[in-house]
Image 1 (cartoon, helix red, strand yellow):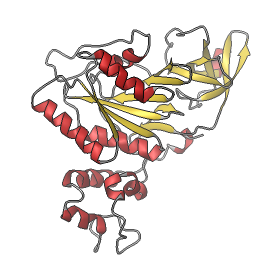
Image 2: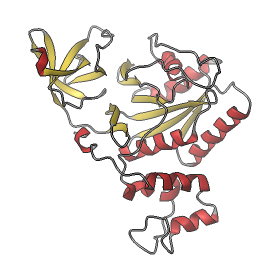
Image 3: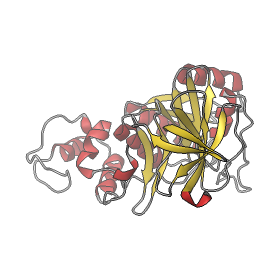
Image 4: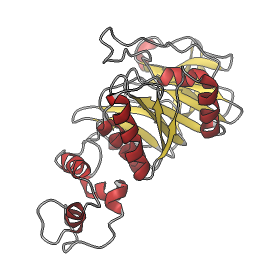
Length: 312
């Protein structure tokens, strides 16, 4: 019987349809509440992610996921060969970064772009604002830049002023489903521990202080209040965007989309074509050279070919 099943999951049965709260190719952690049970996907090709709403049946020794409801959204990252889903059916994605370990502005830009392309609201959170120095100044500048791009932002310190940080997070996360993402070591687990009664594993920075130690190994859903949830996800270094169609990049980049005057050619890629309004905006300073270089980097990538099967 076991051979007929694929990946293992945890699902919450306190509502119909049930909700997927954890997934792992290995044995999953123990269920977090008496409403959660272990379940198996039927077959090996089911693309089930945390946040999915699923229909389950009960077999003698196991719950089985038989169906997946149509998703209202899905946030994932992808490189040229692999799709890496994060969560489905979320209301907002909280992108956590900090001065230590040094964050990458491009990670922020990529995460914001992925959220915008998926139709998901985004919140950029600068943690560890008690730190000082050049890295802290760079992190503040990155936050100011994404604010200029129209993203909502928060500044806080989970460890230095936990009560203030908790209040700020509660104001943004109450009554909605929030997916937390970020590079390793930015303090995601510390922030989530302020919101939920759970001892998430919190790691230390490496001895050199420049690399984060990953403390979350699988995406995990935690109920938050009566009608909300927070979702923890593993830290990762890069946010791959191979799945995005280059033809739609401009509409997903707020500073580019603000240039409403049409280019000379309807199919302009804003590269070397004459009378390009995007490059004119670049020359005028309305679009920064860093952002244009980011766009050209994305333009050069080929969209992934295996993404469509993930969407239901």
